[in-house]
Image (tube, rainbow, N blue to C red):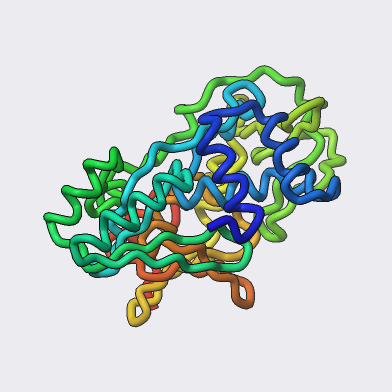
Length: 295
């Protein structure tokens, strides 16, 4: 099963359970054998997390570290397709293969570029699902549909107030370019500001005299709430698409990704999430303060 860096990292995490962020970066360096890959450690982390394999606190990564998720068989939005997420040691995979094959089910290992191997189960009767649960693998029915019903839509006031000096607010998020650009004006206008520091940068959302420290992703989407054309839904193909280079909050991206169980695709200027039911796509869109647009 270990066909790429992601599989190796997932195998390692499955054995240790959790690790500090610095240890995760060291693991990336070891399995890639390339010091240059250290700058991509966050990318490896996010790819594994959006597929439900691990969890971390985006606002306190250094403090909380990286934790492997328990083994879960997730029912996708595609009929008769389940995917295995979370901890998966070689012994567990062998036991799962033997268990499912013995009662008439099917297990496939599907390799994708830049992602861990996807373990897909199909032809699963209630009898097979009960057998899987006896392996201490939780079965999660209609995962994305249920998660989409509880997606947060945080208000500005949901985030803690901040008293950072306005003079420190140097780089401002530009909703037209989707980049952080130097703000050289003496008067700091409303918007989202990035403050570089030792360790992760912090982000301040300024609205009048009120300042809030926010996660980068939620802050950007709040600023973009009046910007059209960033998200759309293709009814015919059941594809939810998001303009490329925009960060999705982890819980939102996981909900979208596990509709299919496979990583999203990139084409032209958009990221495409396949097999997303219309109702789920609507709730994903509204959770990001965007207007519903179906094409």
